[in-house]
Image (cartoon, rainbow, N blue to C red; front, top):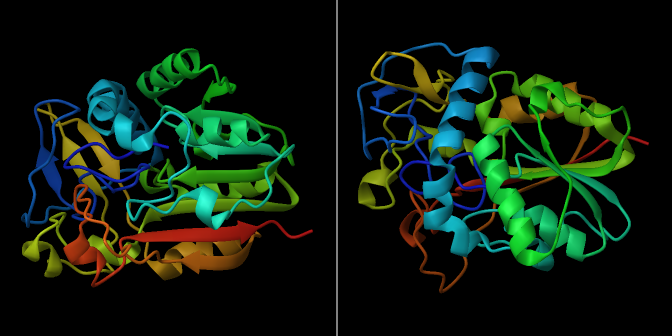
Length: 302
């Protein structure tokens, strides 16, 4: 699980701490430069799967050190935090009893979630697209003594056999960063065993209409919820350096169903009473008014 690079995010990638929410091109000097906060003038640019993959692999490789320097303490060495609202697997048990279960983590970052599950008796494999993130995962394994197998892979091209895992999960990992998110759902469904669960968290789709601002400016919509143009940052040479994709709630549900999965539940965590943490665009002010995270609980039919 990794928080997004950029303005600041929550546990996991997807937008908690990053530039998601505005389908614009931000010109940046390097792949790890944070975008400006607040409204910007929309400019359209496409980004297919190959462009998105190359840009985001470059971004996360470049930003891995800074990201963990800023967010490592929050993420912990071995914990599964589903979202910036501080919802933990130890409290909600969305994955159920994991002891002895074969589990795959999608977009693991430094893999604190996988280490947490391994300590609960699960047999875990973790993968990420980023070499930089996986280097942090290896370092954490040495530091903690909890080792899980690590694989460098793309969620749209999973290098695993059919029906290999009892459970697949992702805490803000990978899904918002792929153009072919429907294909990613099909790949996850393929590697799940019948009856297995696929649970993933991502930025709530409605946040796309608002600027990434934790204050009052973040309460005013600046673009259409139905605008699916990707958010693209480019470097000084005009090469995409970061890409994030928006799907409406209906889009996401259709992707899940189209992959042959059953949608069991959608959680929209409320902001915890007394929780004062502000992380990127996540804040008590916004969290008390509208959701920042959606968690999808799905299952492959028996």
